[in-house]
Image 1 (cartoon, helix red, strand yellow):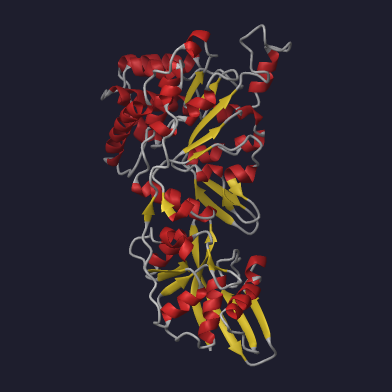
Image 2 (cartoon, rainbow, N blue to C red):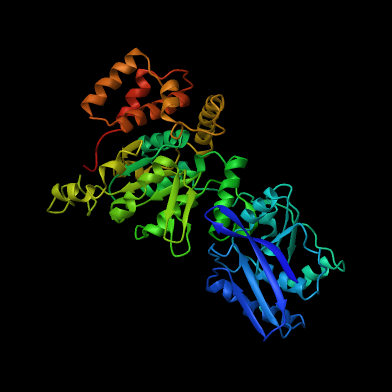
Length: 504
């Protein structure tokens, strides 16, 4: 008899069907797993053996062969434990032959026969739903799997509970999907003293999902401003929240299995490697650019990142996806994120202060700023110099506009954009992400504005990308003002944020 249990293999955010075939046949006692399995999968033999022993069962003294089909597809991870154990229980006739008909299984086994969380439960549930199947998984990821609508979920804390349920002596309650409650207040813009120009740029960046670069000396408030961007961004739409959940599931699991409505905010250290930022590794995993999908990626001390790592951001910034190509894997992860970066003007950071600047100024500033390549700089929509705080500003009480007030204006501008681009067939679009042809149609300036833009494009030597990014920013400024058309004042403000202040 050959027992069959469906499961999956992960390739990026794609779940590939795998058929776990278990045969118990006459012959010398052996337990063999075939089908291009990695070490974690081959170690399933010992976990399954120990789990069955914990339940008072032992493997029959026969030849046991587990085949993971298709045999030429690499199998990685510990989530094959449960389907292998269930296949053995079927082959040993502990479970009825049709007990698992219509179900896909995944999960890791403990030595005490408990079921342990493994990443990818939501992806597995969505894949099972597409095939008209239910899902058997550990109880610890049951709420995550339950986020997939219309899929029957059997979430058990241990193998014994699952056996009892399948044999009709116990009933497992179906898990309920959960949405994360607000995890406490976010940092508020009202706490930032002074820096009114920077706050204005931050609002524009939030309203249009524009990439932002801040340049200023240490202690000017660049990181403080960036940390307050999530507080003025609108919450994730249901579709966006599911995309974020799928990436988190592939990366190792959702926090407590709950759907998150707050936009991701990732701030990796400047020592981050290329696989950590873009994705990859021996077992391809999403990188920071994908974990920041539909949210914010903040790169502090931008010039301290390795140049190769920064240049690898250019493709995700343009395409909204990160492609990881390896000899044994070629996977694609979504990576539509808003890039916010901050850097000092030079290594010492005090270029504008003759009393504190180093002896190599201003040459040190050119060397330091040229660590950022021109093509990467061209992908920033907004640039702002953040000056040092004046003593008078530091002595003033923090009485600026609160994040909640700014968030209302940002949400109104985003709603205008969503309505505009929904009519063009885009389910969710912002001024920074819609196709160029569509942007030209909706951001075409009036005659005075076009004359200003043409003159500025020649004087500032704007690239085609830079030209269109000015239009995108101007469209966002017009949306914040409630203007139907893009005018000369909107373009003038957008051009003021396009100064070629760094790089070369």
